[in-house]
Length: 460
Image: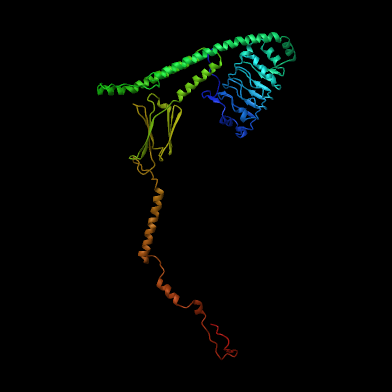
């Protein structure tokens, strides 16, 4: 059969094991608290090894681990409350280390690589197990597979989504001795075949590593072009060779890109067996493609041109790259360039004018040159923008006339009403108004009721 692209999200990044950060990111429904989790979904995370879950999440009841790269069931025996375990679409080859999951009710091992069917005997200790899924495994193709499982696991009620009838179990018990012998023979043949597949996969991996080492040891393995200019060559020839270098680089990159496309097509069209090794090989191939796509390192230089009051960004974009794949976004405090969908962003040391900025591309080198005028007084051009210090200068200009007016008041007081100090002093010499309005009246002796008593003091 031919390779098909697996329907896996995020297959490009390989995670070796389970980390605390990974669990917390998938525990949002429990406010990112992991010790009290009862349900955890870690499917499609490219997990290769099970670890830490039985220590960090002791209260788990439901655990989803489907569509990963798990090769062995381990580190789950302390999950005493676990009821449902989903390990479908992994690289598991035998059933083990589940005896401690006392309340395990449902186990899904769909589409794995379990060929040792006799390993299901370890599940006899899981007395609450009611449902088991083994469809898609090599052992499911064995003759007598269903009869062997039905008799071995008496507590099962459902196998591969089909209910186990009482009559089916009775009939399987009658033929169990012959079925068991048949299963052992098929297991032995499968184990021998798997051993050969592992040896072949190991040999192929070593050959690939050797070829990679040869590529790395050869000159120019990184895709760059190196031109040797001999010292005895004339200067004119040196200049001519130097001018031809960009074209040679472009041709070599185009050739390399076409070779990569051909290699990719050959990989997917090559017949391959469905084995754990082939799944890992597919993952490595896709990881290599991702690294090749992400290997977009561009040199740049950011210069502050004080003479023209602008900031200049020189981005070394590849000459062969089409301009339609480049997007430029200039903001007052930063500049962002999207190159083939990859962001390149820099914070600017000064505020710039996005509307007055310009972007040009060199026809010889392909470099992208972005000129961003700064917000200031000196801008090349006819239009003079508002200065940054306008507010402070305007406040100073408003205070200057006031100060001048104050000086005029002191120099020329006749133009404005001003109190006379001498007048104020003279007013203080006069008697109070109250005293003037009430003059002292001396009583006359002619009044009949007047009695002058010398002991009574005068009124004033």
